[in-house]
Amino acid sequence: MDKLHIEGGNRLDGDIRISGAKNATLPILAATLLAEGPVTVRNVPHLDDITTTVELLGQMGVSVTVDEKLSIEVDTSTIDKLYAPYELVKTMRASILVLGPLLGRFGEAVVSLPGGCAIGLRPVNIHVDGLRAMGADITVENGYINAKCERLQGTHLNLETVTVTGTENLMMAAVLAKGQTIIDNAACEPEVVDLARFLNTLGADVQGAGTPRIIIDGVDKLSGGCYDVLPDRIEAGTYLVAGAITQGRVKLRDVDPSHLTAVLDKLREAGATLDVQESTIELTMNGRPKAVDITTAPYPAFPTDMQAQFAALNAVAEGRGVITETVFENRFMHVLEMQRMGAQITLDGNMAISEGVERLTAAPVMATDLRASASLVLAGLVAEGKTEISRIYHIDRGYECIEEKLHQLGARIKRAPD
Image 1: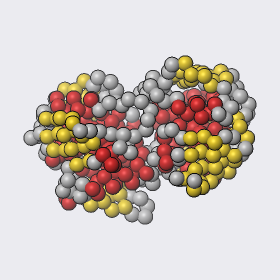
Image 2: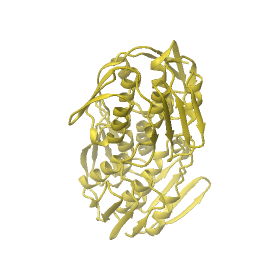
Image 3: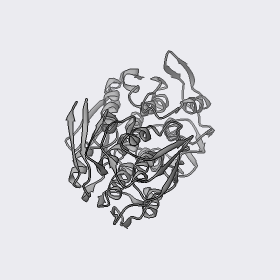
Image 4: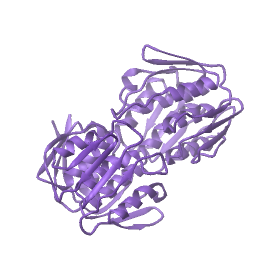
């Protein structure tokens, strides 16, 4: 199992390209199951979660071809299994996203209950209840969701809580349902919008994505097509924080600034100067950052997936910062590791209260989930000495070539076998 070794203290300065969004690619790959013709998905990031999804499609008998530029061509005409096994689903929660497409197109699905990061309860009851309301017969037993239907029927769904994967699963199930489906209290994230655009490219009729009400008029079939995945806003935000925490300059290319409004506002509040253009963002931080208060909430508010990175920033910022986590109940595990590096952070329920210190000191630390691992990398960039981060398979699930990109910016970081 690999580790990352980081020699802290370098000011970052450079340009990098932002990869395609993992959280958009995964539902789009699941949605290719709805298409009767070949589909090509481009701007796909090279990540472990993408490899897992490709393997899952392959196990179903789907023909999947990956080219040297990591465009993925999917042909579902060879599918022979409507089954997502525990061995694959346990490593990645997004595997649940094959449930809606399989049921919507083939009328049958057997999908393991999901795994993924240990950041708190993320129940699938909203997915199951929504599909039942559309006419599916579903049982959950022995760790598997068993679903059958004739043809799903359009209906009015008012989701109990805002859920991205729940919105996506039900939207995909509805595109081939008979009649109209309305999803109220839908998630508004850019990744949901990207999925809707992809579905419409194949011939679906999805309106209102990006708002709390999505309206889907069912069609008889979806055809093939080509689609480019949107840029990864969380990767972009992470590298912007890397620039800020090292008091450096970082320019991002191939990014969509409109998806980062809440993050950019907090970076400005921390003292960063930002030059924002149509597809680039340049951050310059002259001097020590200022601590900021943050409350996470569904998009367009501050994203929970950027909370850990700002915890690292606050750890070395000037003043007191309070981060309130409202989305997941177990997402402060990175704080305990940062404390080993000298961070003055106390936990009080769903709040992390930091008193910024001028410098952190290197220590061996362990990644506990995807974004926690990114925060430990950021802390390592400014820690005195050599920080060793273990269990970095978490980071490989969500960041493409992170050590290469940080090295390109001037960081002293390398991957080494355990």
